Image (cartoon, rainbow, N blue to C red; front, side):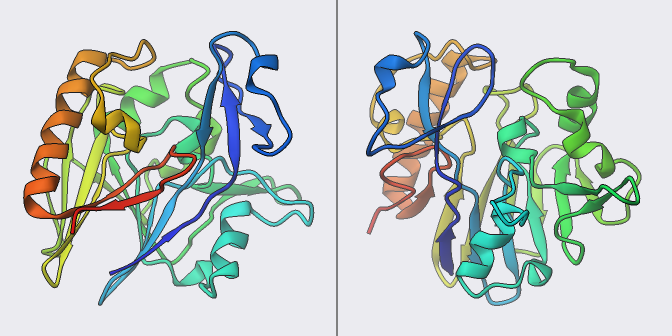
Length: 248
């Protein structure tokens, strides 16, 4: 499998849930509001024998030319966004779902950003997100997932096409899901926001921003031990320095 991190840059986020761009060379974290977190926003493209997969969709920001940033990132790696075959969605917080679709200002209609892909979303996560008027969810980013033939609503745990395992982890959000891809004896794991950074895998702490911080801590330990034993490659969506880590 070929793994391509699609970084949209570094951001700080505080209790307002607003993502403010952060220049790692020039900006000072101490000038940001107390408690601000510094995170990378980093979807992943994975090229397998049969698919070009996107895992989570970023913030949905556009660049100075008006091009969706995640589209530009793919093009920069010689990947046509129209060639994405699967979009795997861990959960629907706005920093993971912003690039699901886009709006045509003239027609006032929403369109999928990856029209030739099938989107895989946990059905309970979608239902929960649509009911929650919180700063973490931007309903306009994902409401087009409803009643679309491009969407498969996953229920619980299972397998896609014989090589993509998915299961509901909960912990960060009530119906957060994670993915393990296995092909040619290689295993690639995406733990979403339950396992967002390398350092979190190596330390024991409970984060206040998680739905169930204790469960997150327990799962990180479990996955780290299993990954070490089975030689997983981990993908870290919010890691500033290490998007990909492999046990070889």
